Length: 114
Length: 115
Image (cartoon, rainbow over the protein chains, first blue to last red):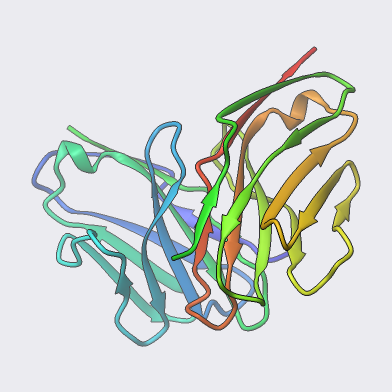
């Protein structure tokens, strides 16, 4: 079946640096990708929706300059956390769906900012 | 605004028994989809079951079934013959087609299966 690959699964970075997380659809064309953030024992909070070839739509309260999303192709979307701070430490999950297809989730990325 | 409410933060069930997880939602739409996702400790989101709002028949997937009450805006998940592998966080989710395809998730229910 369709698979979404998210990389890396874990990353530790120093405060002030930037981190890029990749989300790839392996056997379908992902016209829409979503990025979520999940705090411990809490639900998934939608950060932004990205459509291939256009600018991402950010949810209220999400800083677009801090969380840069690029969806340059039908199989790849990236989330870059710029100038990371310890409060950005969280679990980030991407999901993707193609035309008429169900939503598939990546395995998530555990980001720790020291 | 669409909201999804799961009123049970934690539930437990004896192995081989049946448990029901509740979910209610708020919407003014008539056409939408409802889902239950399972998130085990690995954090991978796994689709358990989905229901189209226009279908009156409750969805069933092996040991998992739903009780969809459209008028009451209720969408509960029943797990029969519970197994140890069913232990996970369960999220109820809602989606309206053709409106950005955004999913709205409930706050989750942590299910413990007691051997």
